Length: 463
Image (cartoon, rainbow, N blue to C red; front, side):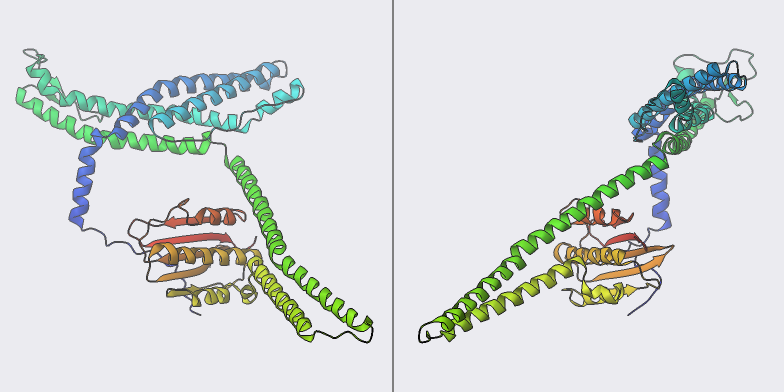
């Protein structure tokens, strides 16, 4: 058995030279101001500025007044109602920001569940005051205040760049020239204070236009910095929250585990009913016929002739059916828990790869043995993935790597085939995802067109 610490990673093409990277970067910079994404991000910053400024200011006033009133016993109810109004406003603003981000940035964020408190008036007030999603939305609305101001500054880059770019046109066509005796001349607008640049000749306006081009080339990256910050805030504060995500994942995995167990029981029941049970019934019928023949021989007048050939035929049939029933029961038990796993996952994978139709390199490093359930899932995942490699990839060679890190078990199956593997393409990967999710596992697929393919299964050591 070979043991090496690193995981197998798919081969990647050699990196391009420095000159190619520089040309690609230069093209990206030159195209950035003309892309749909850049203009959508600029529009998001422009719309988000008044929305974030007004919403944050109103929410700040409501929360400040509400908190101040709750200090006093006399005005506690008024203060609580003001705080609740602020939280409801924050939820509404959060929904608006989510829709705006989805429409312009493509940032799809799931809405948190609505708050529907029940009980008496005091209970409903208390539930609304402790609305976790409402407070998270309030935190986003308040954080949006400085972010929206930064967004307005990002839009300023676009505006000043466009204004400076049109300096020659404004001089020659619209006559926007400095007046006689004006020592300063035409101002060159820039979002960065540059000591008050001015031009007083038509040739100087081309310098202003060059400044405008430079500013416009930088503007998309300034707005992207702001929008990426806003994306992070939206994902962190306007979604359902980690606890809600965890509860939803547990509900889904529980449903998957129940469905998987029900499907397994139905398969076992069907296999027993259609296979071993039929053969055992045939055994019983054959033995019953033998007993009947022997009874007739013992009770016959003068001794009825015994058909030994017929009895031998019945006994042989019963023996064959019993043997087939044992084989089917053994195969059924092997499908539930393969016997090769009794000696551990590395030996089971060694047996699996030795029977493969293509050469398979096996690398295992399992210092701590996982629980039987995890070993079974890992073994079936390796078997299914190796079957996919043989059937669909056209690979000449494959590799299976098993390693442990941070209390997790990582199983990777890679090949040098044609690639293009993806979820839901009839390769059985969807079923594997459901199987590993029942134990909080995951699957990562890297399979570019043309290959190579690497599928990594991540499982806990303990189920």
